[in-house]
Length: 124
Image (cartoon, rainbow, N blue to C red; front, side, top):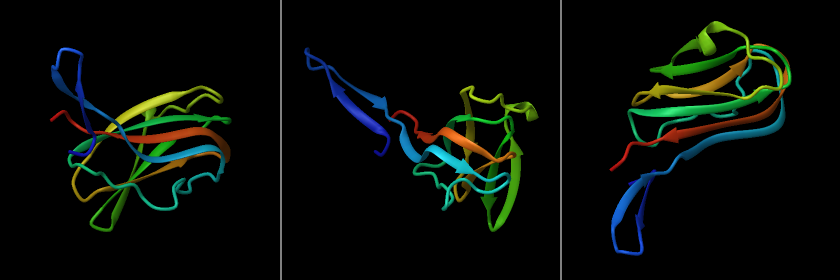
């Protein structure tokens, strides 16, 4: 199954471990306020699932998920609607249902020092 790795220890015991699936990443990239950061929206491999975003920007602003389902897009502000501090790392988890796609926007012109979006698939 995608997102699951099987391990065997020295005694022959086997277990499964969840392995995050990289969905999108940017490093030291200029972003324009209120514009999708990824050229193509991100789709889940396994549904429903959890996406985890790690992000750090060089300017104060808010992160917004752009969630699309059946050609309708809604915006969801993360961090309880509060601005992120410049040069501080944040991490957010959120659910993604079948047939949804996701993109990310930032509310200020900034440099994305790092953005990683990974899918956290469930254990087998």
